[in-house]
Length: 121
Image (cartoon, rainbow, N blue to C red; front, side, top):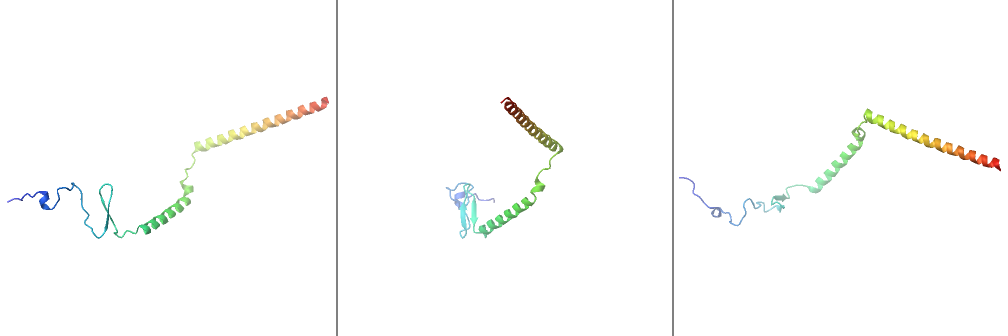
């Protein structure tokens, strides 16, 4: 003979429960339900404070290593970038030189005007 069919409510399940829901089977441990209905068990020996301090120590070590390697992490300039930078520096130097020449010419012109004004007196 085959199996005898028993309805769910006869097996020990209540009819009002939703499918897929479970009841936690750990009465001694603290149980927390998440928003999605998952069961999270607390008190399984996880030292959260110790873990936090350990994570802080690891983060500090990582920061120190990254500071040491900062020079190696900086990208090297390509020839085109170097050439563009030197061209820019040359253009700035030339512009600065032209401004200085204009100031010098203006000063000479002012001195000549002052000298001619004094000679007229």
